[in-house]
Image (cartoon, rainbow, N blue to C red; front, side, top):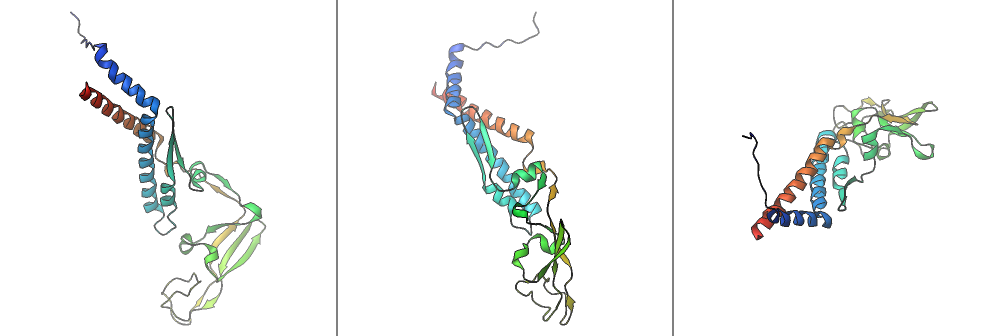
Length: 214
């Protein structure tokens, strides 16, 4: 006596479902469903990163989320994030500016959410050929209650007549090395499982539809 269980499937009952799935694959509908699922996964991931890392910044990862798309053919799904710099963040490597310019690296918290050109109270200090800084001008605080337009001086915290300035707000370098950061995208295993789950759900809907029609 056999310990196994044998299940017989009548070929004529399975064939219509298999044909329907094959037709769906050839039409690219299956991979399209996979692409939609991957775009949703990646956008959610990038929006979460934006909330976590750019609370005071320029919403870089939110922009990356909005630039996420999927291009599909019947044979493949290509997930794309077209936001400038996302590839550099993912793979890492050296960053070198064009035209022998400088790379501005924030030296303190007040500089993280800003750009040097937004302010008019900074001056350039050269330390060596490959290292310089943007330093705040020396100034006297006339009103500690408000932030002067074009100044990086923090709001309040001072009194009239206080001497300010002299601090380095940006280091200027000819090149910087950025460490690879694979967390800017969902884990590869999650991407694969999400795509397969979407394909499975699509195939299940086709099966239910054709079973109901038969």
